[in-house]
Image (cartoon, rainbow, N blue to C red; front, side, top):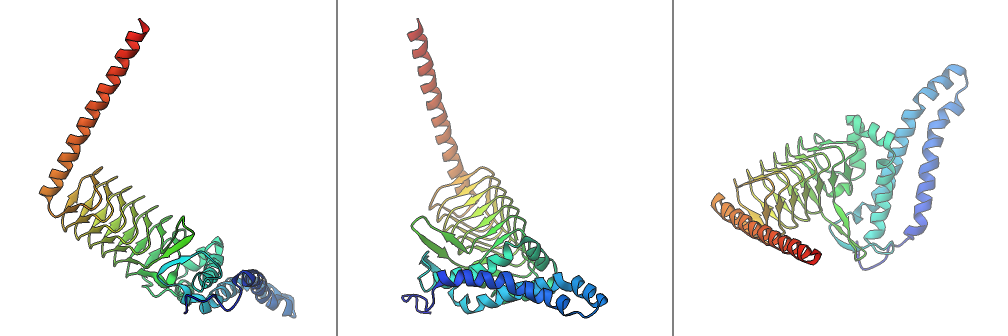
Length: 308
């Protein structure tokens, strides 16, 4: 796809047409057997299966209409402009996927029936493992860029963010990889370009920044934050409410205690280095607390002198 040229059609004009077709065709398909039935028994049978026909026709139509635009689901940074040759098709793809994702009863039904789930995800370009468990209220987008390995788990209300809107009017898009038997916990967030290794866990409310790399059998504790571009090795433990700074590197087997703050660009290769860093931070914190106490004490003394 030529990214320097605008799409050969008007996306702004296509959007209402897309929505009209999606609102009318499934209803017509589901209603047709009822209207064509010649006796009462046939009408009752047709009415009984009408909801299933509606669901199947709805998701099939929504998915089929995105197929011509799946070439726009690629990695990169693009302006959020419907005239752009990548963002325009992205918008059309997102319209189709959003029509299914935001239609909660249909999406829940799709994600609850394995055969239907597999078919629908394939239509929308997903190429990962179908043994992965995706909660029906987990946020997923850009299915061609979503790499979920066997028996991975994406929990309720988590966010697997293959794209991120930026304040400069652009959108950043990149793959997200969740390894075999890995878990993205409840309310956890994964940013574009991130990798969570095999058998690793991202705890409740934790967050991975853009293009972070988490090794295998690593556990990131609840409400912890991993900065953009950080690299964390295998068999690492990151304690609850810890923060790993931007582009920091943590070697295999290191155990980060809860509440720790690893500064930006740091490289921790062993437990001794970690203890020294935490010890230095603790000392600096104690000095700052002493300074603040002194400031407070001086202010109180001044108030007492002023009141006399």
